[in-house]
Length: 265
Ligand code: GLU
Image (cartoon, rainbow, N blue to C red; front, side, top):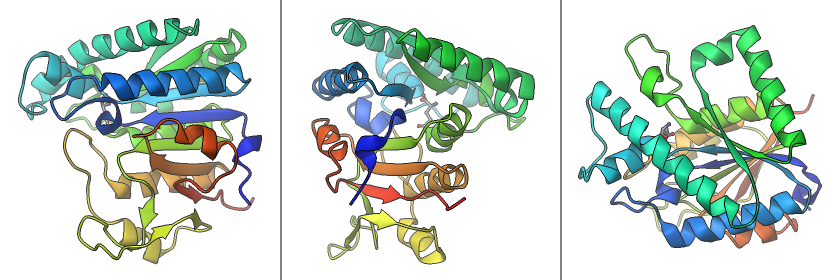
């Protein structure tokens, strides 16, 4: 029996493939539904922190580029455009349910600096007290460079955010239903895995491979996130973001997606 219904502070990570079409334009139907369900979870008393990708993807979409730019400075310019677009959408869509959102942009340098980290934690606590949903992304316009200031993908970032904000659940919404024991795009007999008690080499092998389309991470970055979360004592769920109504089922302890259990402390 799962205990998701007991979770109070939840980091919800949304990938670009969940929030945008392959064109890089916002997936309006899905995002409208998702924002409605997240607002409802928030209204029911859960403390929600979102980690949202989409800056580079939406920026590329707005510029009418056929794919994400490859050159760093163009990627950063696309992120500057897309982040603005992204927050405009969130602000607008959440306002429909009278939910206030706030933007927080992080870099690795901030996460590695204890003073900055304290400021981040204090801001998160204060926003939650104010009944606001913080929406975090990496500060892509300054983070992507040769000095390796970047985290580079938001799966790991969301696990770091979950740890810093004292969350009890990390929920990764992706374009796959769950973890399978083999790559379902190649092997049609691949079987879903409902619970991962421990990340063993077999689990890592099952996760192999990278993502598709506009997204950045594949299953392997999610396993990395699960490791960070597990070590921090946080359960992580990965599920498909395609049907936001399933979030209600998840919080009624139904078997949705894959749960990666926190390491025993
Ligand atoms: N921070 C990137 C963006 O907003 C996304 C990184 C990722 O896809 O994991 O475009």
